[in-house]
Length: 321
Image (cartoon, rainbow, N blue to C red; front, side, top):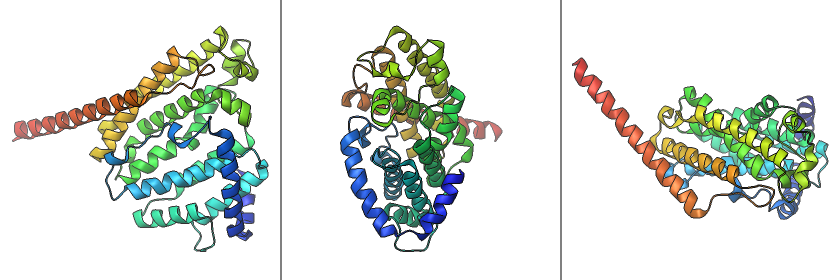
């Protein structure tokens, strides 16, 4: 990330107030252009506020605001890649800077990290992914896409786990879930990402196996060949969700465990919807009732798993005595 390193030095010398004003103006125009592609309500990292402890909700909100600010910069079609990298570097500089005139979302994130005594590394990892978005628009293989998800998706789950007291042994299952959610979002938005940002997150070798190029995403509906590629992506997602299944039982905090279980249910339902429906022909998403049903079933499953685990612990203790 040599470009980002060079940009950090420039960011340390820039007028952060002017930077913040420009980014606010530009991100407003970006959201207007790309609203049909990525709006906040369309993200697949839905943390239900009422499921999380009240004293941690402001920190979660601050983290998501920081990530949203960086995402708006990376997705801004009016900025040159070098400008995006400089702006992202300014956010990273502000995370550990004591200066007051730095971008407000980064200042708020810095203060939140200080209050919670958490590492800024998860934020930095996200910024690395957004910087990659500024310069990279194609992914050669599923392996390359998963490496991108390590920086673009996994830090979200890792931050939430750390915020709720761990343990870090839950990272692998969390990484799998977050990667699955990321790719689901890419499939939902595959046409808009191609049209508006000239980005294609579908593995290029899988397209080539079917004799396709990125232009296959420009149609009004998926061809039979593209449908096979999408199904291949969905099979990869199902494998990730299988790896993520133990996550609710691994998380220490019961509220976050319930949230993880609900998100697993949402991801499974959305995967099924994308198998049945065509993301080129329509915006594939769960209905409000469908999402509510997933949350209820996920929370119920997590509660049952917790009760069963406690019962087993008590039974073993009684046997040992």
